Image 1 (cartoon, one colour):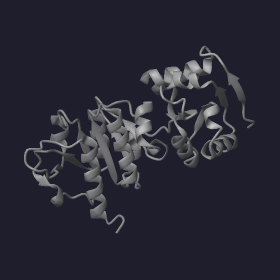
Image 2: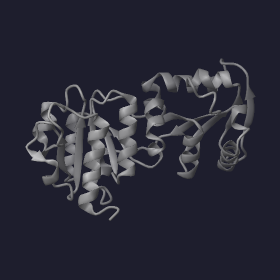
Image 3: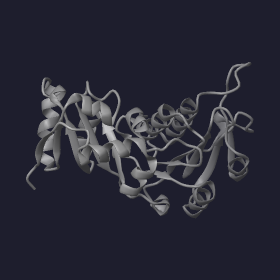
Image 4: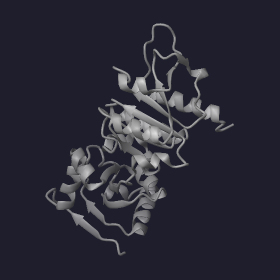
Length: 272
């Protein structure tokens, strides 16, 4: 497929308006199956992972570095549309992207809850009520880095495909199955997949060093303010307590997820 190269000057251009709508509206991201990734690092990650790029928006800021030239060459090889625009128009799509010189529209892989039953799935992270995009993106990043196989986001979470989440995840979206589910549907899918449920709970009865994270398991983490809701705690096979010094009531939710993932890795012998 021959690549299309155009120079766009107007914010009224339909491609730019579509990108702006993707950035602004979670419903548009769900409807279209597209999401935004911006910045040179994410562009290189997307190319390396062979992510399905729908459209690339680039500006002159991409031209002056070796990294930018690598990205341009990689985009050329994909054959996907590249639209050259003014830096101010990049910032109109995503605030702060102008200095990086690139915004990508990526097509999301259509994972389903039934995929959890696959034999390659043995360690899943489930987030409930994680509203901060940076925390949710960092959880995705740590899930991938610490050998998790999938991330499920439940009610009250930030949109896992919002650009701030994607930015914080630093490329995890291109390699890690990331799904949305209600509490009811998510729990039912975990049970069908025969995944044990381990909930992070400051009041839990199972100390971290006695937790069983060797078997196929889903690690549940909740919001810092309220923790996990009662239905998820009740469903847990283990309620794991991470030891903390006296007077400290909770951890950042990303820190809790990373600690539990690292303990699962230790028990399974990863990196030994």
